[in-house]
Figure 1 (cartoon, helix red, strand yellow):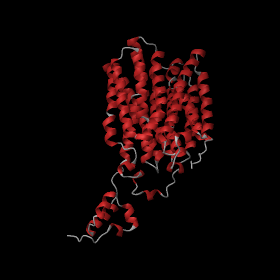
Figure 2 (cartoon, one colour):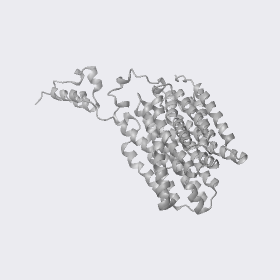
Figure 3 (cartoon, one colour):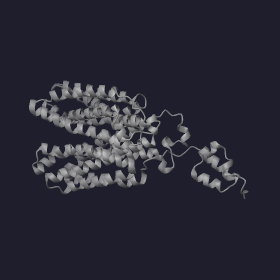
Figure 4 (tube, helix red, strand yellow):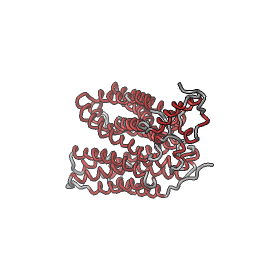
Length: 459
């Protein structure tokens, strides 16, 4: 038996003290013997298990996949079935899309504030529960007002399970390669569309009907609840860990981390900076202009003579390009200043719109693939660049609330853009004016984001 009293906690070297976890410190404080100390040293020298943050990354990826797959990615697939069963006009059905986007935007700042105060896990779980109820209720729908009311609930739930909580939790768990981690996570948006659109549109609606399809979406959303409760923790400190899986906070001393990340701005402070408003204007413009093109690409292609199947192919290229773009721009945010990564994404949107406007009835299908993939690459830049612009300029102290306000700006633009394009078509019998306006706005966005200057850290 080892001799008690031979080893005191305060006899350890400072370096070893720092590396000891709380459980080991308690053990040593009870004056255990040198044999136990040797075992502890051996444990400390071993490589740690897989970083828990990777589990967080996987769940965040699934959350944004459900967010896109159950929301924007499948909405248009229900338009014709609802029109057929109820006799509603397409415009009446598309009001539900505007409600979804506007409510999501309005709810975003409040959801962000809840995340900053109470953490991510409860917000996502509550949002998934409410969203599932909203989708399940559509299984019993008989009136247009029921449809609109359900999408109010779904819009709130999408804000609670989507980009705000997912980017907040990933930003907390990753520091050195935060942009890459957010990029990987945000590819879930493209994957959600790629998986759910053919599943719902090609399998569920044709074989089981639109009512059962809404119920299937509800069940999918409810599956997030136990997963989130069991796995998600808002910050590494909640588990006695540190970002990136480092052994101790001293390991980050040499990291090049934004000075704002250590303190950070409150929402009120951020609202007083030019950086906030330039970022908000940029995403208002990009959200409205990109969705204005995306939501009207199919009818435009059909107007100039392409078949519905060929026109729908643009969504396949868009989803593929978006998934790739989110990863690429996440990685790029770790390599160059984030504002320039955002400017590049907008430049790709300019190029895609120019290609789209040049498409003629005799153009080969390859030109549609080129357009849609370039559009997807450019559109894929919004999530990682928005998240990184917020945390590098304003820190993490009120990340949820600030990100929520930027999301609100983007959502308002996203609700206006498609309606503007539709109005211009009704007025001029062409999308040319609308697409030209979107081109000009993209250029304005490039200028706006390029002049963003890092705000001074509050004293």
